[in-house]
Length: 494
Ligand SMILES: Cc1cc2nc3c(=O)[nH]c(=O)nc-3n(C[C@H](O)[C@H](O)[C@H](O)COP(=O)(O)OP(=O)(O)OC[C@H]3O[C@@H](n4cnc5c(N)ncnc54)[C@H](O)[C@@H]3O)c2cc1C
Image (tube, rainbow, N blue to C red; front, top):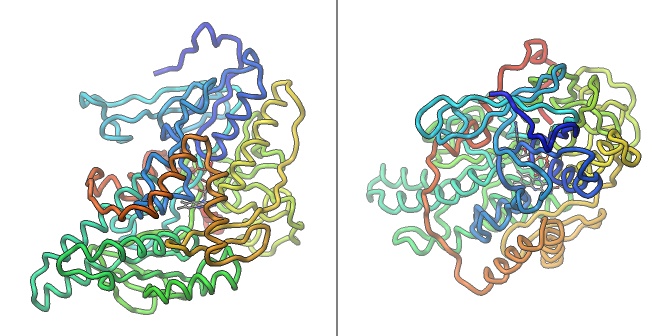
């Protein structure tokens, strides 16, 4: 199906934004403010009709927050933008078109309500903004795609909450026999891979919540659920530095979490994971938080990549293109606040350096949001409004909520733990979360969380197949990248 513009749109150049996450959303917000209505038509193709505030995703899994509390409605927040729900699966840089696959009931897998094959739409653009973010980095470990669950989308967070509760139910009804006991322990073991903020916050917050509710089952007590956190690195929360990382690890171990560092998994199947040291851990739940890789769309473009991310100049213009910009987790944005690195020897090391020789900005919401705003300014400049400028942002620090009254935070480099860190963490999220309605919902939920008993009900709304990474993150809908892009030494990872 070809895209036809309405009369109203005729003559106005179209700015097409791919992905309404932190970078895309803030780019559009700024463009709506900056560009007079007759200067350009703004169009967003987004896989979801909300901006997901991912830093609070662990609180959805742990039930402190309702999923909608952290979903900022795009159509309400972007009033001048034409929002289309779907995935861009291909871009033609010469013809200036994008192929858009819109969801049917079989999701993105090609059939519509009445079972008819859905046809992609071709959308024209004059300025293109590529902000499709990232997906879970899976490596090629046998069984991970089939048996592990990522933790990047609301679908995955909601599913994991229900799934863990279901394991408690199944465990409770296992027979009182040696085989039944073994199955019971397997069901009550959760393994999270990756001790960065995704895996660590997930384990810390879920452990606190399950400990509070587990006593409601007849045969299960708070201490019966075993949490295992595995990482190939020798540290928990390495982003926070050794002191806060150690503090987080001590807290987790005190709570009974089995933290295993210097190992990762070599395979996963329906009943267990096997570690690189040969240990086999029987489990019914594997959560995958081992880093992220740029959206598979990026590798299909045939453009220069650095560690799998699109190479952009300091003004966020995509190298080798005209009128195309990129930002966020999908882009290799040079961090101009860090000194240039000496020319790298190996191809792996060279890939870590951005277009300018500076290191890459880390893949965080903090950067993506600010890059989005600078990108908007530069797109506007290309349309004759204002001047462009380079992206430069000094990190404000990081926060990680560890459940209960615990957190670690490093605002402007100052290490904090305990109650003070918790207060800073919650204050940070409240100001960073987009939109007053969402802030109010979250603040009220937090207040109620201290006053009311923790909730533990299963909605079982999401089938297991839809919560696997391929489906939940729609990684299988893109054409294969050109062969020369899959050469060794250029890993598609951040
Ligand atoms: C659990 C978790 C906790 C985190 N905590 C923090 C934190 O505390 N602080 C912090 O700074 N960062 C945090 N991050 C990282 C942060 O979420 C990312 O860096 C940030 O979301 C990147 O923004 P983005 O705009 O590049 O991508 P996203 O915000 O992921 O947005 C990309 C959007 O594009 C959509 N999309 C993807 N492909 C297509 C396509 N082909 N067509 C159309 N739409 C598409 C996606 O569905 C998504 O809506 C966390 C991430 C996770 C998963």
